[in-house]
Length: 188
Image 1 (cartoon, rainbow, N blue to C red):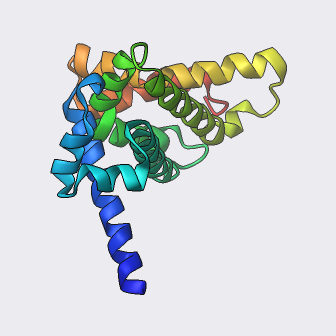
Image 2: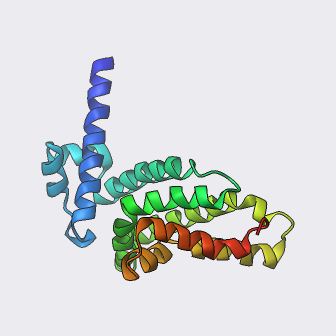
């Protein structure tokens, strides 16, 4: 019984791995269960039985990947802008271009809009946690504005502007982000 459960779990993970791989390679409208099944080495019926179809598969893959992002981002130290930016840029270097692809498609694919909204909430919560010492003593609109500033400076689009559009090195991108954050930090 245990071996069967482990095999089923491994198959589920293989399907999710394939779904993520296919998602990043193709426009969302071109993703098919056939392609995911082929990449995972299973039948389409196995994918459907396990995830209930394309929407269920996308939701499960997004949930799993969101957990990975959360764990990686949780390594960022609270109250240390340079340390937090290092973790953030590490994350963007790994998946930033892929996130930008998803954001470009979210208006055309309602399911992606939901996933992007969850990602935005995760990013906002991350900023609230990492910059908590710099939000102390702020309330209401003043706190909302400052948190929105942290969210904006640390956004994937800011990383894109610095890293991709301006052609800064990874190190220079980190430095630029810290310099943008410094005026908002209590210690500065």
